[in-house]
Length: 182
Image (cartoon, rainbow, N blue to C red; front, side, top):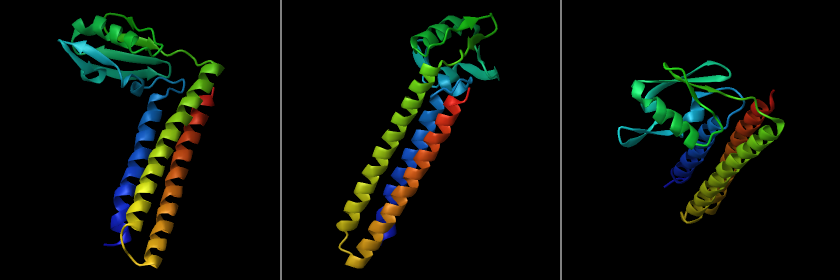
């Protein structure tokens, strides 16, 4: 048994925390239209709740518009209701060919709220990283390896934790700049 095999599962958890943060930050809108904004929308299609992207094409013809083209023309009403029920602050309109959402400009207050949301998501990622760090440290201590090997392993875990925390900070800073950019 070596230190790498003890640390590897926890490093994987840290990596997943950063990936999850990156995915969650795509859902925080920064004023521009993005199909990922509608990822959580589920539509009642033929008696089953399905993700919106499984019943329609979603694209952004420009920075302020999301266009949803259902594969079945009977789905217009269900899609509009699902978007309104998702409580995203959008008011969809239907032109007979597609459902169109005009993404409104963000107010300064709304931008600040979105920055807070991004920081909250970052804190969740940091908590996950700290939990993985704790598990790695416990595994190293319980390994019955020589004391100097244990100390080196703990140093490796600390460096790894610091690097993942820097990645989280970089993602949050980038999202904050994106949100505050007018």
